[in-house]
Amino acid sequence: MADFQKQFIAQVLIYPNIAKGFRFGALVRFLQKVIMGERIEMNDPEFDKEFAVYAEDEENARKLLSAAFRQWMIDFRTRTNSQIFLSFTATKMNIAVYLRKNLFEPGIFRKVTDYDTVYESFQYIMLFANLLEDMGRKVKA
Image (cartoon, rainbow, N blue to C red; front, side, top):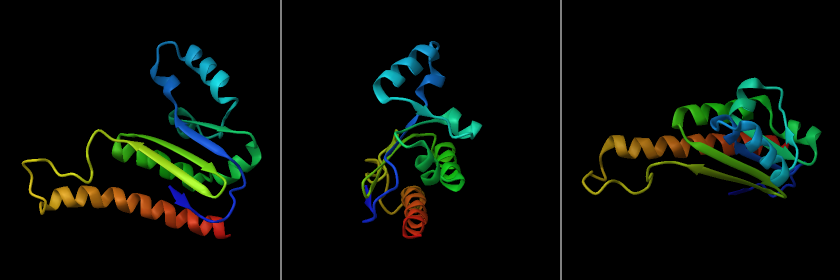
């Protein structure tokens, strides 16, 4: 969670597009619409394939989710092969990432000083640090 101490222009929820992975995608999309509301298409085929965006204010959601931000999400998804969830509410940006590994707990039989173990965790930290730096600049503008 990051607190930017400046109100975001829209409340936005971004989820992995789970409908694409199901055989009955139309049924899943219908259930998502009932539960989440109307999905916003971002007119970015690659992004829309991977993520589902929900917001009450479509115009401001589009402003918040710039092309660079959408590309960051696609790149993150590709690099990590993980699911990422985001929300923008009030002054906070919440990010949840589902990984199949423990980043900050090395394996029982691995050395804590092993370069590869430390570097792997460092890469994730830097991915998020870059995102927060970019978002901080965007919110101030």
